[in-house]
Length: 102
Image 1: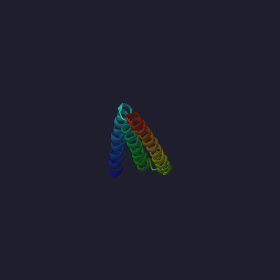
Image 2: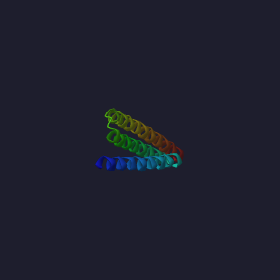
Image 3: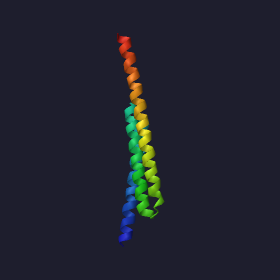
Image 4: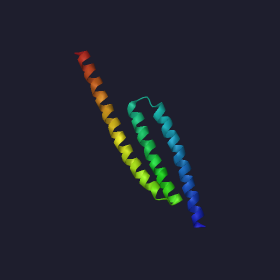
């Protein structure tokens, strides 16, 4: 009885998270600013990890949690690299505009 309730709860949570991932991907693709795209990508990866953790609890397979931890680390590093690239490009554009105005 209680296992059935947990299964329904977990399946419902996975479905809601899947819908949120789709919305996040749409926001990432349609975002006008680069910062919007980086934030959308970060949100998508966070929701993906959350879905993986829920599937770990639902299926009882511990290796999915290990994969989720690796995915979190890779996602964190990639977001840091994208943010660094974005900041450098922004600084280059600002410097060019300053030189142009002077």
